[in-house]
Image (cartoon, rainbow, N blue to C red):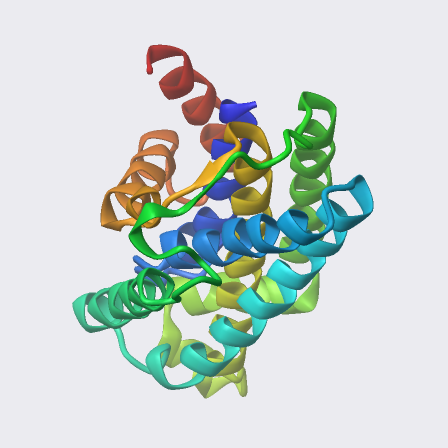
Length: 229
């Protein structure tokens, strides 16, 4: 199940980094949103209905946060964008650490019900893969690829590059939130230190190792690195 969760993270990150060409370091923060949404809601509703509700809530919150931060930060490029998205991730983590009784601070939330199964993880991997393929074949997907190749040329033919980059960024945040919820239901605990910068680097290794812009490579890299771990 850990490999499937890594595949989910890799697919979302590859869409942002490999297909839209935006160097983001904020995936761990969005993963934390999904994980803590599941931890908090399933703590109050320890049922499968509560778990699925928590995933929906986590996705909505992650998408809103990505949209709010993405509109100004995605106008940046290169190292500046990486630093800005890393800052977003750290802001989320610090808010969680200082969340008081809601998030239980640095101690995290333990003893969560084990709702995540390999069938559920596999289902989300398949859905995410199909959605990503169809997205890349759509007009917006082709615009995303054109931004990666040459942003100035894309702007010159009337493509709203900021809109395209924000859409990809939001999608990456959504997949990260789903992965976070599944991980919380798998390991049975959420702790802020699990969503630090190191977590983002682990995902970047999968994406780069598998090849930027290669979905099959991302899947294979996640499997190989998961087995090695």
